Image 1 (tube, helix red, strand yellow):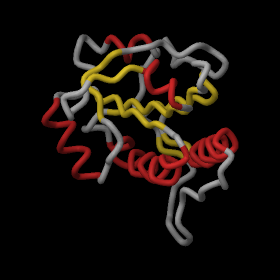
Image 2 (cartoon, rainbow, N blue to C red; image 1 turned 180 degrees about the vertical axis):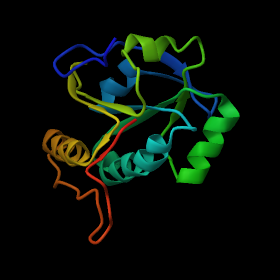
Image 3 (cartoon, one colour; image 1 turned 60 degrees about the vertical axis):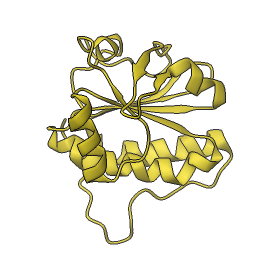
Image 4 (tube, rainbow, N blue to C red; image 1 turned 30 degrees about the vertical axis):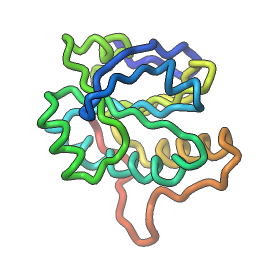
Length: 164
């Protein structure tokens, strides 16, 4: 089953975070648009892509963007992954038979969804596609009424594509 595409409704979920709190999509959307990133600590493409998600989070969190990372590993590995790659957004654990991952049609990680306040998926990105991350930043900026953030640093080598 492929990942849910733009224009579809994002399934709600309730997942524990590594911080001991529970998070739901509904609560995040009550505040503003939400970026959901599914990943796994052993995935080299996730290791490459998640720091870019963190840059987006840092650029827009004060403007109201919520980011929820959904990890497909245990709590300790998830905590270590966040530490190693400098991730500060909430890391949630999809440990109950990957129920949330299946609800979103995840068969490749990383998979990223941008969800509007009404619960509609605005963008779906599977694997790492440089132009899609740029588009993601522009869509977030437009929705939040903020200047667009350049995700990639000048002179930084970023391949156009990295399969998940």
